[in-house]
Length: 147
Figure 1: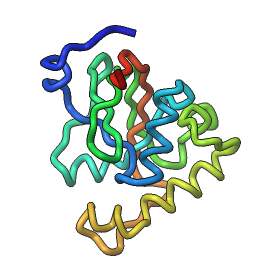
Figure 2: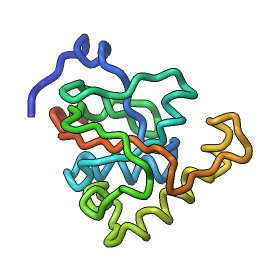
Figure 3: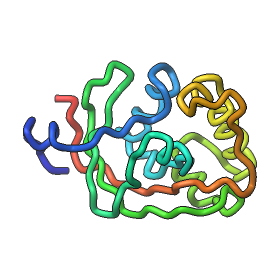
Figure 4: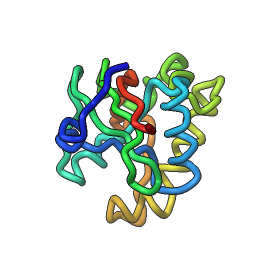
């Protein structure tokens, strides 16, 4: 892993896993221990926030629930596919303990259908289905900033 200066880190976009709280803490810990090397977002959320999709080779700073920078990650793959096309390798690489696509999808749908996600989307009825476009991202940890 490389050493990143404070100026380098400040210039990077922020990557937030889930919403602050136990889920984010779990996901960040998995990034830091190397068990999480993939993540999935809903394309509509990027569009809603006016955010560009990450590009391969781009780096981002990972923050914990208190918004403290804890790591720098580099995107190694970014694909947009319908939800029905998420495969087992991607589900396993998310590092959340899923051993089937069905299990992965169940927990992700719970998150995407949560009150927090619906509030973030400004849509109390936001739902996903087989045709929902998702952003599959693979990444590698390039710096651990925890001191």
